[in-house]
Image 1: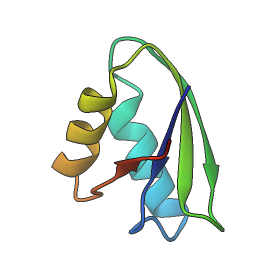
Image 2: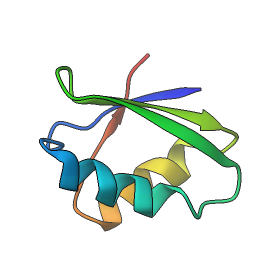
Image 3: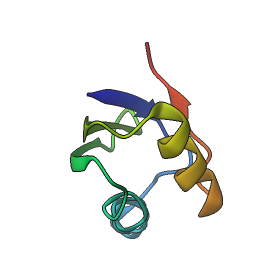
Length: 66
C-alpha cells in the first residue's frame, strides 16, 4: 500500500480523474480516498515514482506520506 497526499483533490470529479489515471497502470489493484485529509491509499505493486508521475500528468501533484 502507498499513501499519497493530494492537496488539490477536492471533489468527486477529482477522485474520478485520479482513479481513471491510476487504474490502467500495471500493478494497480485499488484505491481508497479520504476527502477530509485529501489523501489516497493505493493498493498494488505500482512504484511510488510511477504513481506520482501519473498524477502530475493530470494536474494533481502529490507526495508520498510516510
